[in-house]
Length: 253
Image (tube, rainbow, N blue to C red; front, side):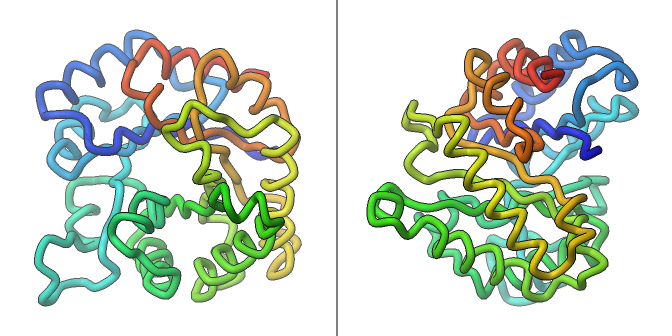
């Protein structure tokens, strides 16, 4: 059985003081690690990583970054390397979020390098994929997902495919209040899983594929109940620890 994973993406939110307060409150709300229905993670800004690592130490809550460069070092002003993250005891990293793709022109070719570099450094990558509203309306959802998944996993060895977490986030549902129906989420995530299966049937069964896009406490259970949905990458609702804890609880479905 694939264990559900609920990850909160804070995006550009959270001073160090806010991060400390959030982590303390989240631990008050979550059951002890052994009684949680899902793995839990928070994906936080670079400036708050060390604070979150310290506050969540020993709790079982994963701390992940929101981006990284694939190179170990070099003339890449403003970037952060895998070693800079692991030095802080960060455990994962979000790669290819649609906002990175749209606002910062992040390309699938660069993500090939980033996913492989994260795995090599001992970080768990969360590779984000998803179609725009226009692509869905023109029947190009599967074409877009095939390209993003195949490109993003191109340099990952078959034996490591299941170590990548994939987050299906339809761009039209991110921050819009719109959400894919449970049937739409299931259909797309099942297709993503099958794409992994083209490389390895074993990885197809083991890889965790999350849904993201306006996930909230009142819709989480229905989405998470779908057979191929292994959790959620939560945006805005994750900024409220009470709401985020309720979404974690919904994974019991």
